[in-house]
Length: 110
Length: 113
Image (cartoon, rainbow over all chains, first blue to last red; front, side, top):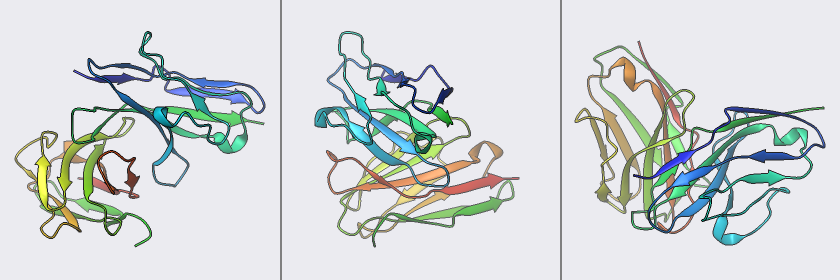
C-alpha cells in the first residue's frame, strides 16, 4: 500500500535560516510527488510538483527514488512562509487520487 | 466560477441527523474529488467523479456516505445518520483532467454533537 510520511509535525525556524521539510513515501509503482501549502485561513493550494522541476517562492524539491524521498527546501525562510505544508503522492495507476501526508506546520519567527 | 465553491462553510449537526454538503467545481472541470480531513491529519480520499460517473468510491468510510454529480458539474456529498466520528473538514477539489493538479475548495467543517 502507498504511504506518505512527514516525520515533523512542527518546524520552527528563524527568518533567514534554511528550512527543510521531510517527506518519505512508499509506493511500488512510479509515483508523482507534490507539495501543497495551506496558509492561515486559506484553502489548500499547489506549491510544486516534481515533474515540473521548478522553484516556487524559493522552494525546491527533488525526487530521490533511491531514498524514496521528496524533501522540500528553501535556503532562506521568510515570515510569509509560515503555513501548513502537505506532501502528496499521486498514484499513476489510479484516477489521479492523492495520498497525503499528515502535514508539517512551519513557523518562521523574526 | 473563478474557483471551487463549497457550501455551507460550517455545519453543526446533531448525532443521527442527515447532512448534505455541496461542491460547485470550476466550470468545465471534468474530474471532481471529495476528501475528508480530520483534525491534525492530511486529507483522506473519499470518492472521485469523472463528469457524472462515479469511478471510485473506495474511500467512503461506510454506507452512510453517498455522493452524486448528476449533471457532471455540481456535486453533493450526503452523510446519513451522522456520528461523532464524522466530524471533519470535507474538501472538494476539481481538475480539468486527472493528470493535472487539483484546485481545492475552502471546505465544509462538519461538527457532529
